[in-house]
Image (cartoon, rainbow, N blue to C red; front, side, top):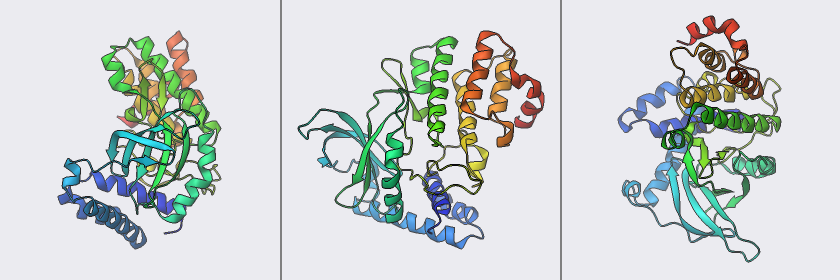
Length: 333
């Protein structure tokens, strides 16, 4: 499977397969790949690679017992594991190359999940991702391959809590929640200006530091950027290797063309969870309905446009979404 769009689709479905109960996986796989033998073949290859890795690390017991963390990755000494998911593990690293000090997060992808072509593509596009220099976006510093060929990515270490957990623990006011959401929109808008789409904006991918600073994570981490323009001529953006039900735009679920409108949809879902509309919040409900419209053309044209609506609503000015609110709300209910 050399087509980059088909490869991204296979990786996205593989992530979904990991979350399916074991007894339902065969039926799910058959339904997801019906009439598409090439896609089924690639998914089976990914599943086989994942199974082989699991067997090498001790089978099912590896889920219960941490495998030994590497002592060192590149210029970084590993000091512990931060987390683990279907694609691999994230470690905390301390730079000890003798030039400067830095604490980082290092994401290591399971060997065999990425083809050599995908690894090479990410390495070519890494500089673009490293240029996402924004105060509300966690930086991507570097990357490479371990001795066993596993791709790894060195990221800014964000110490804090996921968005909704932070808001709940701090018992944030509506004004403070609006401030956080404005920062999220600004970060997404900046990424879009650099021709990069996040594609997996969820509460867990929005961290808030101990100082209260929003940091969007996983911009391009384990998601190779596409070096070719999508069929519509939209500029290259992060490859889609994962999605989260409830936050992923409908077009992602149907493998249709994905643009910045997908991030606008996810922003609308974040807004809905962060600032839940009350009984009298008709304008806020209209904003959410427009941002999360099923048809991408019915959404706000950009993250900046959504941000402007939030500012208008906050400041008591008319909200443009109200003009078509009734039709959109009915369609999304």
